[in-house]
Length: 444
Ligand code: GLU
Ligand code: MG
Image 1: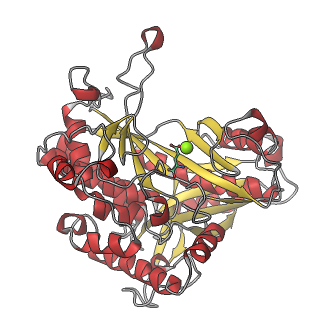
Image 2: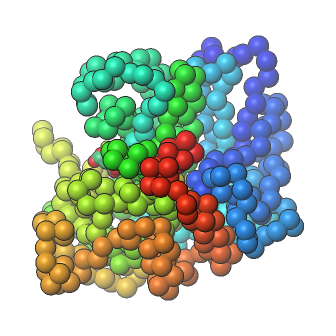
């Protein structure tokens, strides 16, 4: 730990969970109570799952004012750093929501992800390596203009970038690359792949650390999918690869088309089959659908492509220079996600859909070379390509029309999620697209 971790006053430790509006909330305890809290958790209540991003509770919701739960911190998910520039250390432990007797709560998003991972493992022996790649924009900085990807674009924000790198390093998030991205004052952060729960934990920790580091510098970081209708989108790209029970890569087969091994092909076919419904989990806000449009390097059709950033599922490149092994690098990127989504739930949905694809022995999807937008209807039908929902209403309809997706989660979790989304639609009903983007820019 750095010197900055020893302030003159007792630091607080946050015990947190992330809800259906993708807001990370929790309770804060003095550091000397951590041992007790690791044992027994902190109090929580069911209705907290119905909180919206607007500081309201979705109405109706299945919980009302009754009931109590605990958030039980996971000591392996403690993210600590003194490098954000704040006066006291950033110290956050992510937990699982449990019943008072310690039993898992069926509606806890992190538990739901653990269950999906366990179901995949039990049925196939496979597990996943996951990395979240996240984009955000800085507001309130008044940076001089700079070319995207340029040295100056990153250095004008100094010391934001090195501080972020140091903070993420210290918090053991294994940061890999920081980019001054294409959009106005847009940046991107990647970190090393990990098991699914750790990867989702890291996605949350990265957001919080970025927000804090930016705020200490006097800026505001926003991960909202579209901060203005005509701005470049902020994506959350979920990279995944399969690993067998001996830890060997199981996604790559040099003899298969584009190198996509059979189980990974079936997994992708499952994801594509449920993709319209999955967007409700991975792109759940009204503004998500300003991003999911053709020709914006996000995602708009149910297609798999080899190294094309317009595809929803993109087979990523491998670096084979100097005899490097492609197998452990080979991965697929799910591009239809953004930071208004709960990462645990989005990933749980992807895993459930992929698992159903493997269990049903779905044939590998076609690897599509042309943009579906430029095909005629007959060609799209032949390839089985469908347009993703183009609005939150559309995503809700796709979810309701998909019986498989509905069976993935506890009924009360689905009911709560639909309630939160309905409230969001009501709240935003009279807003112009520009007002919507502005609202979400400030909320995320
Ligand atoms: N900004 C794009 C998005 O909204 C992604 C650009 C890229 O390929 O990194 O997802
Ligand atoms: Mg990017």
